[in-house]
Structure formats: C-alpha cells, structure tokens
Amino acid sequence: MTVDQGSRGELLVDVDAVHKSFTGAGGAELKVLEDIRLSIHAGEIVALLGKSGSGKSTLLRTIAGLISPTRGTVRYRGRELTGANPGVAMVFQTFALMPWLTVQANVELGLAARGVPQAERRDAALAAIDLIGLDGFESAYPKELSGGMRQRVGFARALVLEPDLLLMDEPFSALDVLTAENLRTELMSLWTGQQFPTKGICIVTHNIEEAVLLADRVIVLGSNPGRILAELPVPFTRPRDRRAPAFVALVDQLYDLLTGREPDVYEAAPADATPTARPLPQASVGGMAGLVEIVYARGGRVDLPEIAAELSFEIDDLLPLVDGATMLDLLSVLGADLVLTDTGRAWTTANIQDSKKIFAGQARSRAPLVRTVCRALATSADGSLREAFFLDLLRRGFSTEDARQQLDTAIDWGRYGELYDFDASTGEITADPAAALVDAEAAS
Ligand SMILES: Nc1ncnc2c1ncn2[C@@H]1O[C@H](COP(=O)(O)OP(=O)(O)OP(=O)(O)O)[C@@H](O)[C@H]1O
Image 1 (cartoon, rainbow, N blue to C red):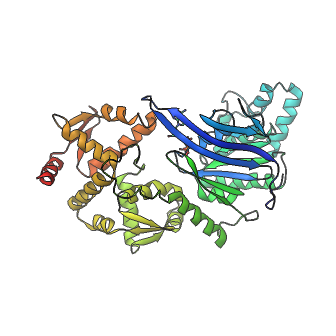
Image 2 (cartoon, rainbow, N blue to C red; image 1 turned 90 degrees about the horizontal axis):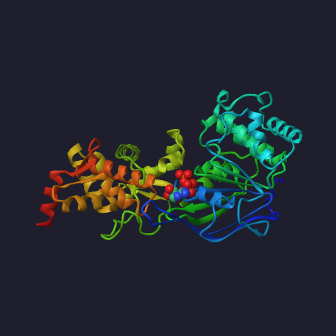
Image 3 (cartoon, rainbow, N blue to C red; image 1 turned 135 degrees about the vertical axis):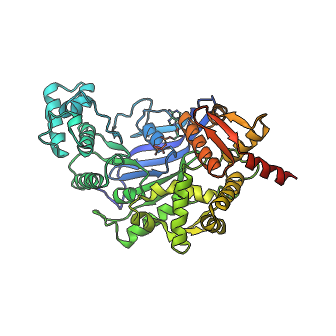
C-alpha cells in the first residue's frame, strides 16, 4: 500500500473511452465528458484536476458506479461495472453526515447496509474513529463538531469499509486553510504509514497545490466538454515541501495547462460564435478591474502564482478573473505570467466614461452572450426583453444553474458598459439608448 513510484501495482480501475451527456433543461444534449481514458493502480494517489464544470465530479461518480456512462466502459478489477462499484468508498466535500445520528452511528451506517453484525460493526467503527483522531467523540452529534471534525467522521465512515479504492470529491475545500492543511497532512501520514488497507486513492480537486501535495499522478481535465488535457507524474518524496523549486515549477506547469487556451478561444469571437460554444467566465467587472489594476501597478507583468500567494488566494480562485480578462483582451497569459495588453492599459488608466466605452466595445466584440443580448434587444419592438427569454435559450446548452450564472455575468458586463440595463423587479432587460446611438453611427 505504500506509494511505489517505480512500478505500478495491480490495476484497480480502468476507464475506457467514457463519454457522458446529460439532458439539459431545454431538452438539448449537454456533453460533460468526452473520451475519457484512465487507469488507477494499487499504490498510487491520482488527482483529477480541473476548473469548475470540467466534469471532475461526474467522472468520480462514474468510477463509483453511481452514474453510468453514455458510451464507453468502467471496469473494476477487470469487471465491467453495471451498478455501484463494490471496491470503493467516497468522501464528500459537504461531509454528508446524518445529523440525527451520533458519530459512531454515522460511521457504522455503511457496515449496517452491508449486513455486518452489530458487535463487529461497533468494533470496526470504534477502530476507525480512533484512527482518524476522534476518540472520545463517539456519542457526539454532527452539530456539536467543527467542520474539520465532521470531515474526520466523513473519512472514518469511508475507511471503515476498508475500500480498495478511496474516492474523494474536494474533501478539504469546505474547510478553513489551517484545518484543511492539518487533515491533509494526517491523511498522508496514515497513507504512507500503511495504517489503513486501502490500495489506491483518487481525489478530485480544483486546487493545484493540493494536487501536487497529495498525488503521484495529476490528470488535468479541460472543460466544455470535460476531457483529459494532460497527465503528469509527481515524482517527489513525502512529506512534500511547497517551497521546493521543483514543487513550484510543477505548480507553474499545471497552472499553464489549466489556463492554456484552446487555440482560438480568446481571439475576438467570430461573428457566428455562440454563447454556448464560448461561455462567459464567472468574473465580475469589479473583480477583473481589481486584477488589471494590480498588473498595471506592478509594471504590466506579474507572476500569477506569486500574486495569488501574496493576496492569500488560491491560484484557482483567480482563474475566472484571468479567463474573463483574457477573453476581453485586457490581459494576456504568457506561461505563468499575466501581461497587461494595450487595451487593458487604456481601460485601467482612462476616466470612468471612457473606460466604460472601452469595456463595452470589448464585451460586444469578444463575449458572444453580450453580443447576443445586444442584437436581440435591437430587434425587439421597444428595446426590451424579459430575462426569461434569454434563460430559455441558454438552457438549451447549459444546466439551469449555469444558464442563470451566464446571464448574471452578461448582465453585469453589459450594465457596466452601459449597453443595456436590467430591472430585477420586472425581470426586464432594456437597451441603453446611448448604446443604440453608437450602433446607428456604426451602421451609417
Ligand atoms: N445530473 C446532471 N444533470 C444535468 N447536468 C449535470 C448533472 N450533473 C452535472 N451536470 C453538469 O455537468 C457539468 C460538469 O459538472 P461536474 O459537477 O461534474 O463538474 P466539476 O468539474 O466537478 O465542477 P465543480 O468543481 O464546480 O464541482 C456542469 O455543467 C454541470 O452543471
């Protein structure tokens, strides 16, 4: 069970050409995973790293047998899954404890479901509770525990099942930084000390440093649809030092991969680019303005991992802002550096009215959904349309939640650029008369 970095152990899970689509609220096909091929062997920790929405959780649930692929196969120890994977247990981001059960009863749940006799169940649960550092809290209820302790229960509940493969879906992301660090370190020391019989671990994360701290192999997923962009070994011994140059270099490399663009994504969107093909990053104008201002104040070029550390953010917290600012050509990405563009410089140094005009021009030419909203408003009789109209259209290509997020971002961007306004009490989006004048000038 120790991590053998030279040779891999037996094959535990084999994901073979898996595709997964969901049906969107509007009935359209929502492609979430495309041609995923990966294997997990005994002795290794594999991290699935990707931005929000890249299908990481869907892939993990497919490995757990909780979701069946639309096409392709998942095999556990050579056998095709047709239901729940018998060799796995899961740890969830939200802990998923039963609030009305004690710690011990929560930990025993899975064993009870397997029909394990009561005495045996109790002994196993007490051992797992002890292992995970919760001795003395057997009779406590979840509401009496801190977040970190609740997640310890989450771990105990999974480990008591002695799974071959432990699946973890962002298990540390709901915890504060110190608690998360503490729990990660303890888990790693249990793993390297072979204190539980699990043979492999697969962890979903959007945190680059966490992936490099924990994993032997990082699989990077790209979005829309989720697919494997790269697979990188992490050849460092444990415990790992975040400040070691090789560690920092690998974090930078993964950062490059995560922000690496599909070739033309951040070119000005061609006239026929659709809002579904080029979704808006979840970036507020205020957030992008802050980031651009920081880059400007530091001479027009900054190292993103360094800035993130200085601001006490995770790199991935900043990624949507980076994506938004590069989509609008306010910043560009060069390796791990953010570079101010000419437009970004003009935007950040202009007076408020000029900066709104610059932003409006960028949003209309480079953000397909903003352009779609402007065009639709221009064709409506009174220059206004209800938000439900756009939400209905967006639901053809996005889930209901994502459609809402897309429209909220488009409203934020368009409002700031004075392209249109939004009245939340009536749900009405109305073209700004000044923007209509600009359109008329452009057409003449
Ligand atoms: N049951 C479902 N029905 C419809 N759409 C779904 C379903 N489950 C997931 N999706 C959509 O699939 C996409 C990928 O979701 P998933 O949760 O797998 O991504 P993720 O990379 O884990 O994201 P996050 O880091 O935000 O959890 C999202 O657009 C999501 O809305």
